[in-house]
Amino acid sequence: MELSALPGFREEVRSIVASQFRFLVGAVAIDNLIAVANKFANDGGWPQGRAGVQGAVRELRDVDRNDEAVKLKALEVKLRPGSLSDRIASYVLPPEWGALDVAEIDLADEKKSESARNQITTICEGIGAELANDLQSLAVHLPEVLGSQSTRVFTVAWAIGRETDDPSRAWQIICEEVLAPANKGKIYAFLGAFLSGLCEKNRELVERLLDEALSSGSMDQFLVHMQISVGVDGQGCERLIKATKLPSLPTNMFRNLANGRATDALSGADFKDLLIAIADRPDGLDAAIDILRMRVFSRALDKKALSEAERET
Image (cartoon, rainbow, N blue to C red; front, top):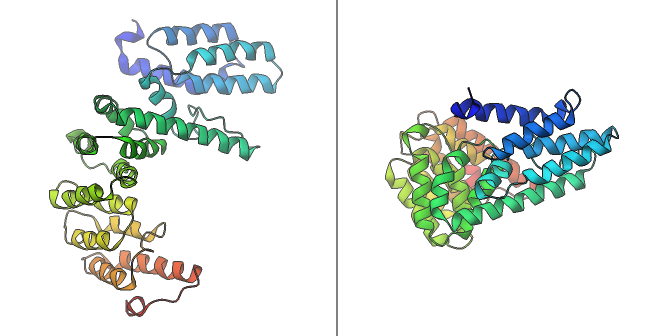
């Protein structure tokens, strides 16, 4: 039976070969490996294979098998993704530092590694811009993008928000997919990343979308992260206080306010009001204490005195 008759198994085999390709060069003849790779590439493409071939090239060069490295380099060039679908599969979906990560990470050369990561980030921003300008393609590719564990997904989401000329329609597409029955119960940071990008050019629309999300009844689990993603100012504080009254919003979500100086922009009075609202939840006291602890730490780090409202808290 041909692998094409078993789509799920077919993709699994391709991914396994790609992730192990660099190790196979020590056990399988190079020409045989190239033949398998070409068969994959000629049968629907093999974008995930490029990272494995890159790793194999490095392995061969390290042991002075340079003639074979040249052969595999030619294969790597052939596997470089051209279509939008292949570029998403190659640059966006694989987790960083994994076997299928195309970034040329060199643990012995931090500058080279940083340059490689920055290059991939730029490519992902470009992919996001393409999706922003072709919302039909966004709808097609969004399910697999949301399913990825890679943080580069957030770069794509941010670029979509920043570049789209129809942010309301893009937001609708994203929300419909996030709220699809198949994704019920999953927490996605994609929404917040999109709003963060959109915030750079249309803060007013972002505020309106957040207000709509608060009143929708279907977006409760995403509210805290979305607000943190665009910054917690006075208006955001009021929104979060309202969110504390939502029984469907887990208190644990508010613990994110203890991270990354999320509340630093708030006045002492606003911070106090928010903290009391969180502490008033049946299981909110511990979360409120964590948030207060980090606020005190941030003030001490910045050599700033606590306000009277903060001391009262």
